[in-house]
Image 1 (cartoon, rainbow, N blue to C red):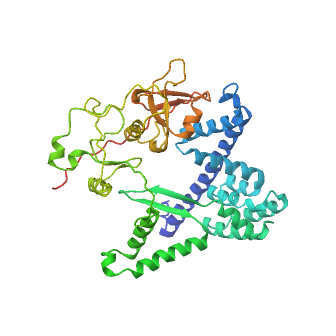
Image 2 (cartoon, rainbow, N blue to C red):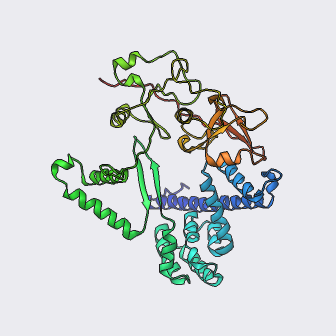
Image 3 (cartoon, rainbow, N blue to C red):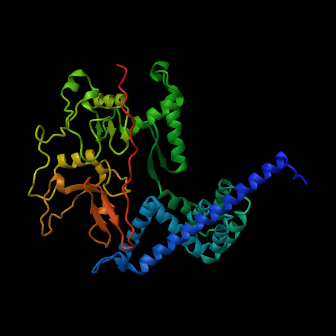
Length: 426
């Protein structure tokens, strides 16, 4: 007997059923991962000697921070991300067991659990009210989208929480912050979490100012473009007496500036470590930028510092100093060469990092304050480096590998092979 061919609608129904099953599986695995992280953090806290050295004044705190660092390295997530995952699972298991069961069964996404946990603040530990909230959410999550779940969960929290609404707003207002998210093609997204009334007022001011501009002032820009330009200009304080001077490191190879500059470039010196400052324009911490943007930044600055990679022909930066404090020139050089924290997997900017002596200045070996013994470590790594059983190993290229007490070792991230440079058509 010939098997019946599926109708188009039947085939589509089967495809969607498979998609749904995959979603349930993803939800279950996400909840299981978060629960495993919470368990690992709790184990580290109750067995601090795994990470903390003898005599440590805060062994539990050091152990949890070390566990977050190891989880971050293993999962290739930020330490804040793994802490958030573990915290969500821990709180949900304790305070929202019915909703957490939905996640373990695959019916609730972890983002929905995070939403619910984030709404527990106004309950102030009131178990009875939290229980009612949990029961309502466990039913709500079964037939609502994440967006609808968030809206209705917020409404439930305001209705069930014993904390007055003004107090809730005051507590939420304390979480205001600013975020910069690097994007593609030399662009970034810059946004702030602020009280709605203030954010609306700021947006209306941007729109009203942009609309009042004459055609000549707009210079062919759209309304969105004008608002974006005004937003950045106001924050930078352009044209105001309160403008704050800040330093952004931009490197522009001399051979991009013209024939005279090209003639002065030494091409027989190849960098052994770090980024190649002679290959393309760089914005420290964000990587290459197009050379025209780099040149414009140079023109806007009005002055520049020429960095000579050959220490024989330039300013001596690598001096064996008797003082522990690094010089401004050394700090800026390290920021340019490394770009980021030297520890595997850490992408915090070197310009904001602390400068670490690989051989301690106050150690028996009396490590010198010179470039060969210095490297940027973010504040978090710098604080942990000599306080835990985690071993920091410096490679020949100055990157730093971590070996954890669990025998896990980090691997150096490989940069993609850059395409061959394309000469500008002029």
